[in-house]
Image (cartoon, rainbow, N blue to C red; front, top):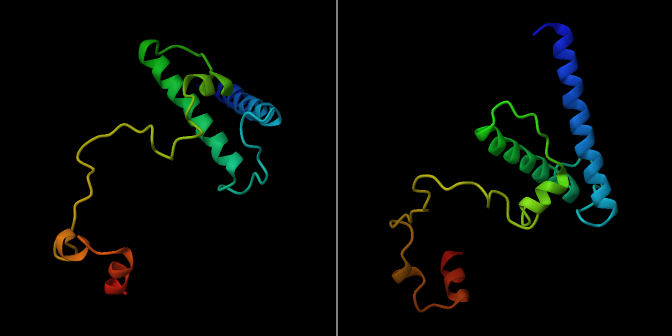
Length: 130
């Protein structure tokens, strides 16, 4: 890929991202998604929502490319909302696939349900641990 092709590809990527941001802002003006109050604040509700939606776009693209690796289809922000209706409601990571044993294991030397919790009030538990 020569320099001109790289520049053209980068322009297409930049235009696509600008389009997604514009779509998001339109949806925010309609009250469909949280408005971005401070774009430089990564914890801003709107910034977090926009990030989730753009990651959703990535998921759709990955799904499409599994069946058609040459596809250049670019989903819209609203398509993500339709396809994943709970994307903005679910806690972060709720849509991640589960792999392996991720259960939390109790450290029995420092905590025992029967000894430390069973039959006690919350106040008693807190008083003992304080």
